[in-house]
Image (cartoon, rainbow over all chains, first blue to last red):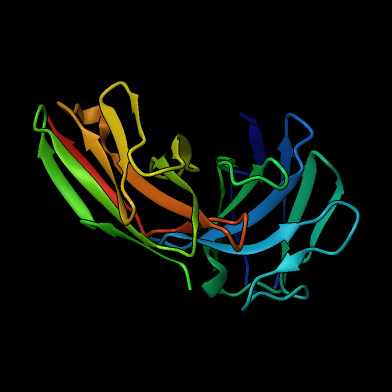
Length: 115
Length: 110
């Protein structure tokens, strides 16, 4: 299994600002993902972070709002841009062995509150 | 469209009172069925993967089983520390990315 860390663990931000969340995996995994989990809800996939190329976004999520970088096999960032209170949520990073139907492993999450 | 439905949404048990959580799935060609535990304010913690009907896996007081339409997470003689939200997810032949259910919130009272 992979061990995943995220920074920051939580933040309180003002409307209109941006926050970048970092995700570090302890091994060279392969597939990395970003999820959002709103209070009392399940996980919603934002995008797949692709190493060396643009992320693949799910319906309802766009690059201008959630730019993602993945410069190598163990690190990725998610930026939440021009934030509004509706962006208040827990953001989760996960990893999965490439081209497999195996389980994903999740980071501890970043709890974001937008005022 | 793949769907994963969990029931009940919430479950309250007394310590020692065994029960089961249900996960019904509708996917085109199940490839993997996953169970996770999520504590408040934390990321999901992986518990089990099941690949084919009839498969069972156990870990301490938890046992996961799989049929062609659903999976059960059996909790035997639960303790208060088993209180958490339990998430179910499934991958199908069309994608490596799992579809998650909404979870069952379990509270075990001492």
